[in-house]
Length: 168
Image (cartoon, rainbow, N blue to C red; front, side, top):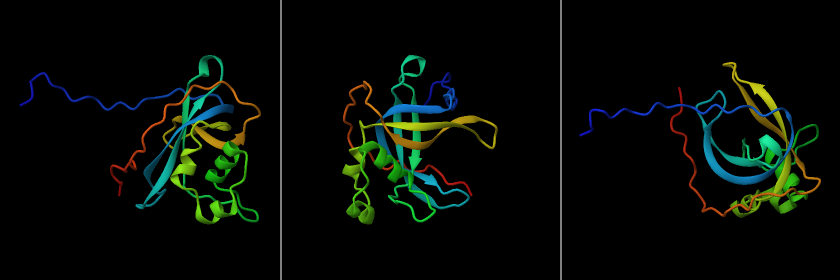
């Protein structure tokens, strides 16, 4: 039996102050596989959730941003854009994916090898349909030179973060 003074915690979503639109140098801190609902659909898809740590000096040092990326390695086609994963790979490794990677995709070890790599990201401010501002990573570039970055501790592989519920 619960004590009478027990109270359920209030679910408070954390509001993060948006970062100014700019190009930031970051280190890829982590990547996890998650499920998300496909836009305007009841379908669920798996995405790679990359966590980036800003390496900027001053008050922005240590801030984090995230980007969910579909696990598709595609160089694009005539008039089409390359996939985000292709652009991220190219920026972090400073090489193009090889023909085998383009044909078969990247495996977990290859994607995990991006952790600790420095890249530059283009960060924009967007406004949700509810009027809330948020940051969105819109592009990736290779670094000109590496900045001092914290030593990242290796983590154990995690399970897919399952979508809790799909709204009808």
